[in-house]
Image (cartoon, rainbow, N blue to C red; front, side, top):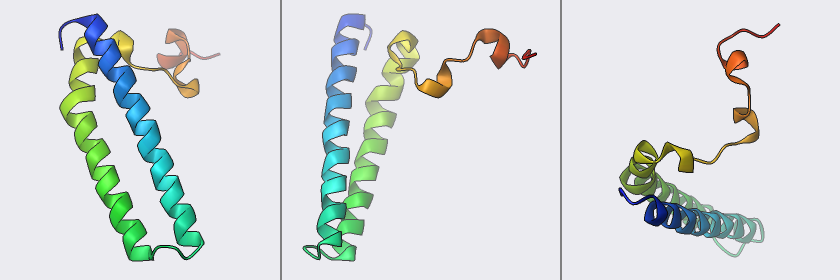
Length: 90
């Protein structure tokens, strides 16, 4: 996706969807603990969901980040300075 504005909106939307999918996985885990669904059902859902998220990352997210690396979110462990990354810590 060459247009940065469109790519940013797509990434934002996909991350929102992923957040909801992870929440649904938490919900199924809770349902498993409550005895509402079987372990097999919970495992099948988790496997299907993880496959879906992996495919979404492979087919859409990673290619966008390849073009627009600045759209990649940073995490708390990714805020080291360039000097630290180069192994130049005191």
